[in-house]
Amino acid sequence: MRILLLLLAVVPIATAANSVGVCKLRFAQPEVTMEYVVEIARSGAEREQGLMGRTALDPGHGMLFDFGTNSHVTMWMKNTLLSLDMIFIGASGEVASIHRGTIPLSEKLVSSEGRIRYVLEVAAGDSARLKIGARLDLERLYDCVKNLGLMSRVSGEWCLPR
Figure 1: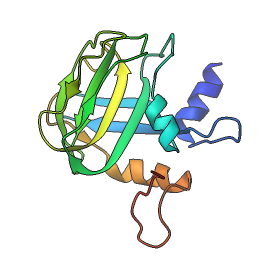
Figure 2: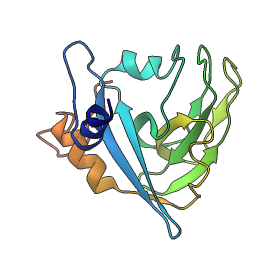
Figure 3: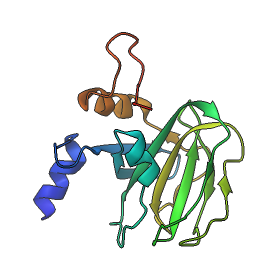
Figure 4: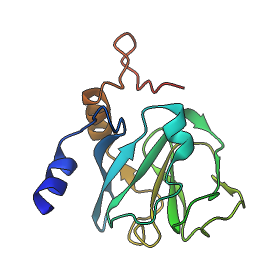
């Protein structure tokens, strides 16, 4: 099992039965480097589903949502059984805000505190050492996204289906 998890962390994967891609993200900050193995949904339906219905989320794992451009983003916990930390990240890769310990099944809106491009959801408490201002390694993310076939051949931009 540990060997399989290690391979998932290094190699982006997608299968016909499960079209969710997996990437390893790295955040740099002065005190510590944080890494997460994240799922990247490949369709609008998978992004809408998110982590709803999951009964467990391994430490160091999560799901990344890309909104394509910097904008105000609102999330919620409807049908989500786990408490999560939501990490709001700008287009430059800088962590703008973190909403820790969301309430499972809540329909209360969780909003970004400004314009952001990405939201990373991880298990509650898993972002405890991550600080505002930490930087997501965008080059590593883009390389993974390209290997998953999510990068537009024409523009070179990350282009998820909407």
